[in-house]
Length: 282
Ligand code: PAF
Image 1 (cartoon, rainbow, N blue to C red):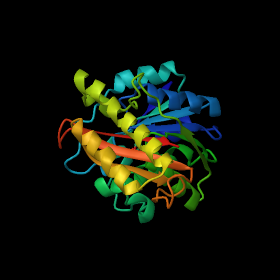
Image 2 (tube, rainbow, N blue to C red):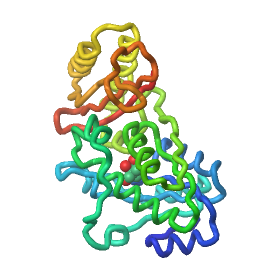
Image 3 (cartoon, protein in one colour):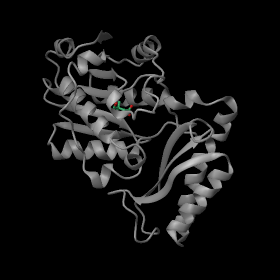
Image 4 (cartoon, helix red, strand yellow):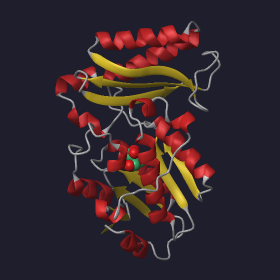
């Protein structure tokens, strides 16, 4: 496995490669990321994983500085999975000057849910992903990129970006890896105490209950409010628990119509606690 830090070195390492598979990450890799890498390895003989904590997608008060950086351990895990190339740019490699050109996603998709609570998040994500795509696929005739379904809205936004810019990239969605308790694996789970880790399963359970209630019919806004209250009673501070159409993340006219997804984001440990997200298609 080769480790490269600059776009020039990455392109040199990819010389002669056609359509590699790519897994973008911010590092601190867990089983969820590794399952994406395994899927990537099935798609191509050459798999690239990037490790880059992208400042552009963090708000000033968020955890950019404290985001866990575990480079050596990450590389060992990637090597064990058969990854061919790790692309680990420093900030000055990816953003040698202030990134004043940005990719502005469709507000209808990107300013709701995560975008409402983390304004500018998807502009930061799209900008870095576009840049990573150019770095990895710019000389390879495109390829495949694997994204986790845990970040449901991110996956949709990236798919739309690829479609609207006609990028020659196949986006593969990988299902969410979960602990036995149902807790979706996330780098931010590392912020949880042992006790919180047990409490944290309540988010996936809340989404399951909300989906079941929605399937029965009834007033959706009321069901969502009840689901948020139930989570609050367990010590959480929810941003949203909601049922949306899978196709566009808008509220369905009838929650018994199918092709829906329940999405949630909530903090555990007070208003400044650890923010977790999850979703469930139904
Ligand atoms: O999902 C993530 O880890 C990040 O948003 C991504 C796609 C690597 C962009 O920084």
